[in-house]
Length: 77
Image 1 (cartoon, one colour):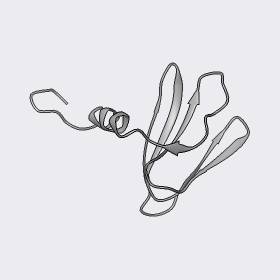
Image 2 (cartoon, one colour):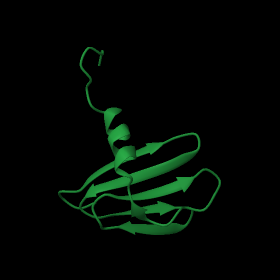
Image 3 (cartoon, helix red, strand yellow):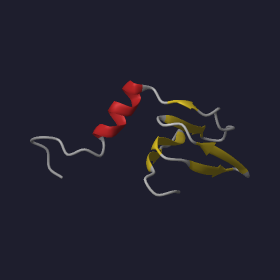
């Protein structure tokens, strides 16, 4: 990971994924390496299946995922 790189990722029951917000990264998955160098691109690997091609992240998905890490008014932290 290089300086100034910003990522967001998650492991779920059905899949693993990493979103590159800015910078450049590589993701290793099942003996393969995937390069992400375009802002707002996503690496998605459904459980027990090959990884999907790197592509742009859906803006609605990114907004929903971001809410998981942002403090919300009137909710405990």
